[in-house]
Image (cartoon, rainbow, N blue to C red; front, side):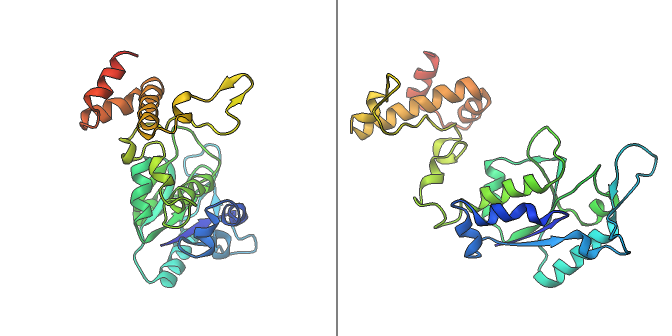
Length: 247
C-alpha cells in the first residue's frame, strides 16, 4: 500500500520511518510512505500557503490552490484514485476497525492541516474522508497521520516479531473487542510482589482463564461501553456473565 502525506513539516516523519519495529514496513515499502512538502506547490517569493480568514477572527486558513496543485501532482504520480483523508476534529474517531480497514487498503493521500484549518472549498471538492484522534485539538495533522501509519504498519504480515502479536491487542475482535490483560515478566517476585500464580503454573487452560477474567474485569471498570458492545454482539459466554455479575 502507498500513503502520500501532504505536510508543511515533512521532517517530523523521519523518526517514525526510521525507528522501532514498524520501520520494517517502511523500509521494505510494504507500507510505502511518500512525503510531499506543501510549500513546494506555493507561489511567490514567500511560498505562502495561508491567509487571513474571511469574516475576521484569530489565526490563518490554509489556501486551496497550493493544496490543489499538490494533489494534482500526487494523482499524476500515483495514477490511481486513492482517497484523500483529512485529519480534523470533525472526523470519525480512529478506532481498531478503522485501522483494520486502512490496513487492507491500497493506501490514501493523507492531508495534514495546520493553523485554523483548510479552505472549506478544497475540502468540499477533494476530501473523501475525515478522521480524528479524539475530542481534542492538535497544532496540526502530522501526529494523527503518524498514529494511523504506525497502527496500519504493525498489522502488516512480517512486521511484528510474532505474527500473532497484534491479535491479542486491546479492541481486537479476537479478544471480543475487550481491553487486554496485564502482563508480567522476570523476576517472579519484584518489590515484594509476586507475579500471579496462574501465569507461573504452566497450565495453559488456567492461564487463558485468568487472562479472560482479567480482560473482563479491566474492561468492565475502564470501558463498560465495550462490555455492552460485546454483550450486544453475543460475544460473552455464560461463564463471562457469571464472572461479571460477581465483580
